[in-house]
Amino acid sequence: MNALVQNQRPNTLFYWFFSLFTFFVVFQFLFPDMERMIMWGEAFVLALIPMSLTVPYKTDFQKKIINSVYIWIFFGAFYGILLSYSVWKEETVFYYLLRHLCFFYYALFFFIGYKWGDLLLEWLGRFFVPLIAFTIFKTFFIHGVGISISMWMGLLWMAILRKRNSQGTFLTGALLLVLFHYICGSGSTKIIAYFFLLCPAFLFFLKVWNRSTQVWYVFQRLIFRVLLVVLLCAIVWVTIRFGSLFFEMVSVGNAIEDFTQFGGRGSTLNPIEDFVDINAGWRIAFWVYLLYRFISHPLGIGLGTPLFDPQVAYFLHMPLITGAEYVVPAHNFFITFLVRLGIPFLLLFVWMAFWSGRMVFKYLRQVHFNPLKNPESRLVFASLMVFSIAFWMAFFNAVLESPLYAWSFWLTFGIFIRFCGDYVSKKDAVIL
Image (cartoon, rainbow, N blue to C red; front, side, top):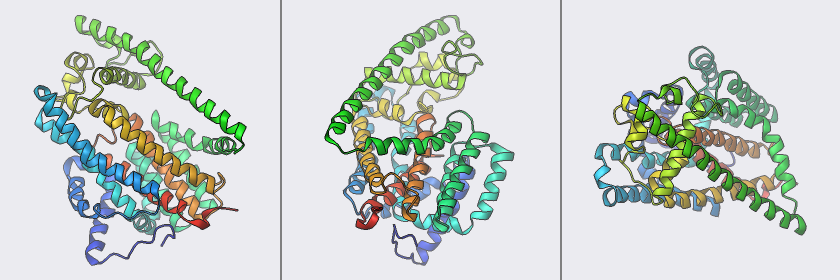
């Protein structure tokens, strides 16, 4: 058993439950559309409620993040429903409100990742050879690297590393992930390969950034503030620049009832004047429009309400899909929830990101920004990398908004918070 997480051995009832859950993890990762036919994710949510009531923690970081997950599950859902029926009652459809509740209750998978993630990796490690063989077959001959396969390969890498923890295992697994994503991936999935390749340079940058002299500390604060201002200005510029263009496209497209020349989702042309390809183009169109909606309704639009107004939905060919304006997300979890829950979500997100970031930085300082020397630190760093894949996917796809993938995001997040938090709590974790 991994020294980072000392779980009690399960009793017989739990053994059968966890066997079924492991089966769910494998098949849901490899065949995510199965959730459309068998709502077993919903069934596991009900079973996970009791185990989420008592959650151990060793650091203040873990405590704050666990409490934030509780706030997301209970307050987030309550606030969304209250907003829908107090401000947006005329536009709220009860059926879609129920569908939107999956945003919150699927976060219960965080607790099984947090409490039993180590045991899950142990069980997956027992059968890693056939699992790898089938994953390679499915990747190269059936589907390629998609959202679920990308996260699944990362989790399988962690399971192998837990079983045979060495620098060679870590580097070999990381290299295979790079090759898989580069050869078989596309779009945001392929970028993960570059992310892995840039990790050493990023760690070196953080090591330099961590210099402790007083002059350097003042310089750090200045650079951080400048970068923050530049980032905010860039977001405002992109929103204004492409926002006006997008609304012109909507007006003209709806007037002449011809969308293909502007690159609606059903077209083959570029929607933003050859600035990006078509797949990124409609995402930018979504994001710009929804950022405008957030500015207009900073407290959110609630649950069960249309994310896109009828004119924009018509322009984007959404009427071809019944209820699409209600269920089609922004393909960016941050923007989707920012529009639906407004400033309260923004504050919760910043709070969770702040404490998660501080915990990661403390871990990196403990290992002197070289996470490969220590077997336990390698596993922690692998969990950080796997969660980074999930976060990246959620930033460009419908992950947290979909029962097909939301559980996997929260599962990897729980594993990462447990491993990293337990590591930084150990007094002997510092590499001298």
